[in-house]
Length: 167
Image (tube, rainbow, N blue to C red; front, side):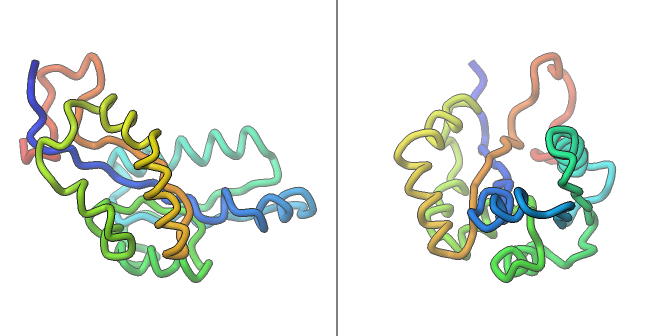
């Protein structure tokens, strides 16, 4: 079994989407427009994930429109987190390293060899540990997290290079 040098992941922080005011807003409003900001270029997998998120959400609820702002259009990651806290940004992808500045418990995700594989990561995050981190995020004015593993290759991608390792 291959060992993973380091499991890095991005917290997809969904602020307004899961908040109570948004739920009531969605019931009453004709249209809800959400700002989804991230720092990466449009050919990056995170942007493709954002597009898929937009498509799926808009398909499920015709009252929702998601506007995506890639490539630091709304600022750097710190600006995005502050925007999430203030409400000027609704959704963003934020690295765990930056999240640790707002929620210290996220520092643990910078440790190498912490998880055996992506399944192990997701089992931990679905446990009491993940629940504690989610509560700590809420105290920091954030909602979430939703997790995307960025260090393991999808099935069928054997032999492809992983940009997270500088390959």
